[in-house]
Length: 289
Image (cartoon, rainbow, N blue to C red; front, side):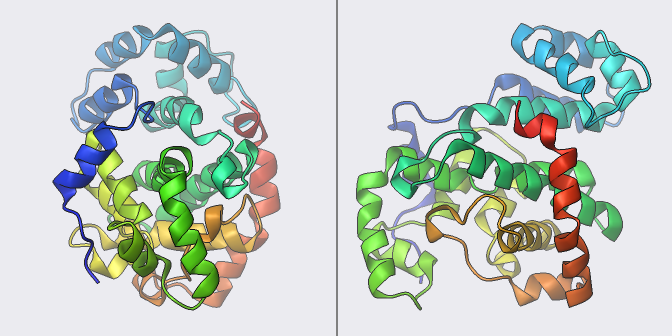
């Protein structure tokens, strides 16, 4: 079933929402600069240092037990030299995303730590899968996609809750029907399409937008199906481990296409599932940040 609204109409709807989550321009700038293989580290350091709030948080988190630097980090340049560009981008993204992901979602009866824990762990496992897979997806891209995969749910809960009551009612009456079909029927669009449109407004790379749009249906992506599959599997592992919650009951079952794409077995799923307690302990500094 196709959605009843176009991409342009979705973006128009988002632009009319007051208080819509925003992505700091610094994140977009870093994405652009780091896509250049000859990126100038000094220029990158200066760009980050222009934002005092993010700089302070970057230095604080760089010195946390999660990153375990060999010596104290005192500046952006030292963070880049010690941790590397991809880790610094990861920290900047976490700092930026915290503002709109660590929030109470009253419409879905979800507290801020639940959605934040879910997002951080999905990001961590996505990166681990990409690193082990050694395919076309880098671990930093997988981390970003895993962290931001639930943006559409955030928008629905915070800004379209009244409209979504129709979908919630339909869900209770038709528990076996696809949530995406119910959303299209009652809203004209889905929460993953809203999330993808928000990624477009943030001018994020196309493969990240696709990972949000096709998180439940990676086979429909015309781009990086591997990335979509990684986030699908990571999301399923996090939910099965009971970390955070299935926000609003909106997630869909684990994709068998994703399992085949990643050549994943039940043993692979068990490996990541049993690593969750250790990962949650490792993530303690980011979870409480």
